[in-house]
Image (cartoon, rainbow, N blue to C red; front, side, top):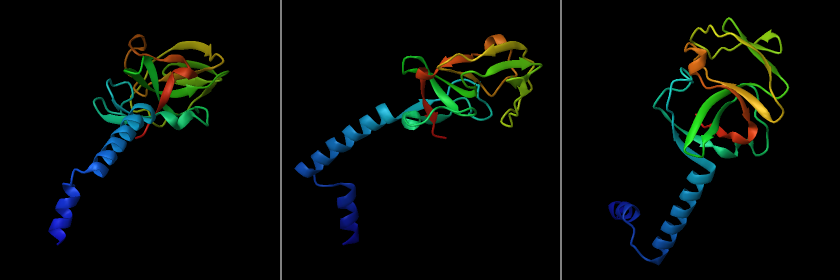
Length: 165
């Protein structure tokens, strides 16, 4: 009796109700994974050790519908359409003044504590005010030369969401 119940659960009878459920499930899955929770493969080492190169996550797109991005948030930024995304950390909000002095991130003239960093940095960048409607983003791995790292001001409208894990 139990074996028959398990087999009928795993291999249901393909009647009309079965096909309606299948179509509804397929439609729901498509909408969910295309518009709410995008699957993404992390490519690159700019966020190590927080996020490993080659790992997998989902981009939760609805996280900023009712709130604004905050300093310290890790966000996925649309770089080229929906196919290429950058994974970065927000370190400055609009109106903040961001600079790097001997590898230390300076925010409004004060050194910002960044416990998530594991690699030493020697960057030196002059102070820059974050423009209205933008945030300042940078990766967690800063031991690479400053000219080979993608970072800086990004329009809030380019933020696609946040990684789920």
